Length: 254
Image (cartoon, rainbow, N blue to C red; front, side):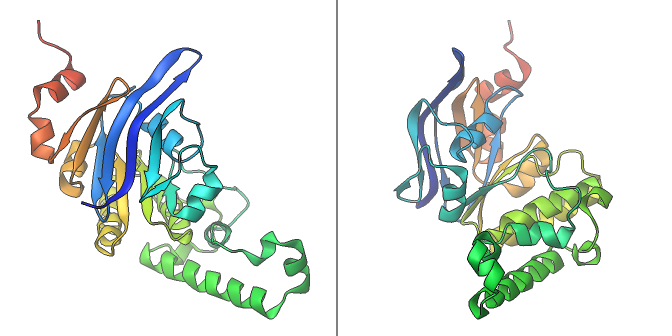
């Protein structure tokens, strides 16, 4: 098994409160991996540590064979690791198209001189990014709202924009933190279908989700966290039948 992402002994605390207590697992390349656990298990904190928002106190993170522990978020994105957040974020005055363009790599406008001179290379790159943005919008069925401000979108559409922005960065692995939370059932199914198609195209996905029916439908393997540590992993049926997982969610029987 080739691992797209390997986490070993990852620890993190805040003012003496241990949130991650030694997380160990690997996300197989090409997989659709589920990450589950009760509230407070440390799942989102783990994503923050892996994606460079927090610096771990101990342990290591590897993207493929490359050590990435403690790298800044922009360097991780350039290396192919992109994540979403529980709450869709954006700029209220920008349109959907502008949001997608914002996340394209190698923006000519990031260089002041290139932006002012508008060289042929800069124009070509802008055209390439525009085509990519249109293609992603069509794929995610956002093309009819491309000119709308994100504030005019539904909650599910905002989640799709978040996924689209991530795709603009051309990720090797996509970390998704509850992309279906607060979304209507019909859009939940649409988002799930989009993610399945992306995974079938070769994108490695690691998904945090509390809806067990979705986890069962989408994910293999499934990794369970509890109290800041990896509890177990396996198929959905294997982890669901594990007494330790049942106790983590429901409490111990006395």
